Image (cartoon, rainbow, N blue to C red; front, side):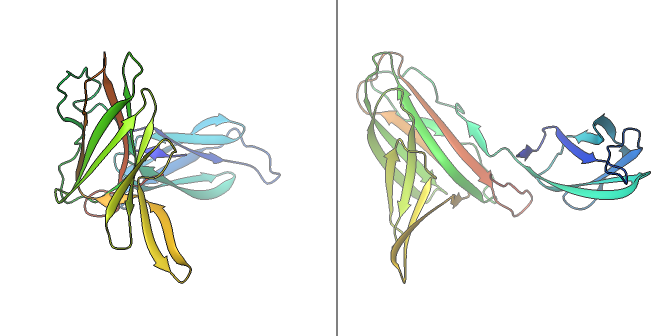
Length: 246
């Protein structure tokens, strides 16, 4: 179960006696250590839930491993539980330029341009796109994916209306990018290589520092033409913050 920064986190412990029966009247205390190992907010009493289960709730303010130390004198025990806390691994459009009615002379619209901290490494797991219009008509779509301001990948495809498509980048053994736009759920990056068994492909997140995605309908837009997108992205460990993915 993923646990996120700025979202409530319930930590629970099960207290039993020497016979293995749940204890209902124990005095259970809890102390929390943040990801740096510092005391987060002193020591306080855990709350009884039911069936010998005691819990406490906090709202973590940073990503990393949070340690909950439960202790009790009768019955005597101490238990430490570690919870991995993440930043949310995805954010949904619109950010800007999304879900709009396009004029006939459709210009480029920015789907995603969420970050400007050049020092943070990110991992992109999945990118999806969907176009729809009242006529339920297929449309020719162009997509530009800019990575770190040094590489632009131009993609084009004819997309059926109302169908969710996944964008997948292919990188061969010579580091050349190609792309696939598919209705099959897939990780964003597919990498080709070669070993003793011949050519091999593997899937993994794409690592970059900054990116933006732009899109346009190249022909006449339909009535109430709409383009929707979603990107699943996480920060990797490093620098001042730690982002992880599921």
